Image (cartoon, rainbow, N blue to C red; front, side):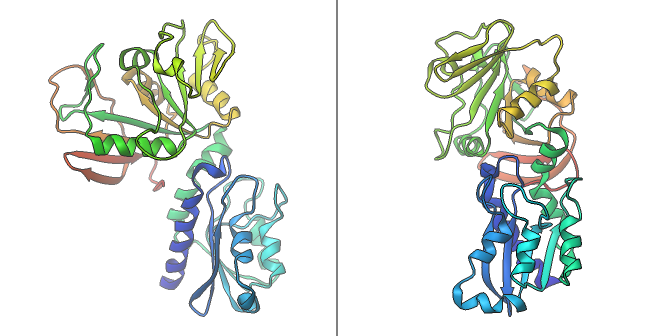
Length: 348
């Protein structure tokens, strides 16, 4: 099994390259091995385009095609057996006479679970299931949220002082160091949207862009029930996209979209479902404390990234309490960032 783990680890590494380009589809990687050497590899690069297995097979060189009937293909997710935007991968594997398939985990979609496995076995393919299964499940955690709950994968992010405060009332306080700020900007390039409440919009006047790290900017999403955020604030005056949920106004104004929302009748879950229809599949929530607490109370979060700083505030706005499973810890000079998952699945 150790050799299978080696090649599956490479497939998982490839899968992560898909990032959010796969939109509501899962991140999947694949490796083809002949006589302990990789002869083809690929991953799901873009929503609506070839799946990982097809890319891996197509990337096999002409001189190595003859080895496919004696090779093993490693896939982080059960090959599909249905026709969507591309043809079924299980069929493509059989067509290319690959005799061995090693899979990390089955597809969680109830409509297709086991279909690929059944087709492969029916056609005489030797199937091994469950190699690095936990890591495979972590890759598709956002996909599982998309499939089952029809909402974005939600990441809570905040920085806190050593005495567990987020900041001071009605005052902008910087807690994290420059390295931590840079990694936060990197995170912003990896999501579709970034969410804050009214008070943070007014007090901090944030830009919420990824200007410290090369990549795309997220769509800014703010709650401004009574449209009290000044029009001169960055979120409303710059050229980047912003969605404003409010009581009063509907329509577009350049790169600003106003959505009239009934906060009395509709829940936070309804709001996330609406964002999902707008193709916001990955969402980072940056505050403030009340906004983050709303997500916690509604159990509508999947991962938390907390920047612990050595600064002492003595009083102020208490940091939320996050209960979950510690996944990772990184020290950046005096700051320590921890990643916490809501469940015991190791998320990416």
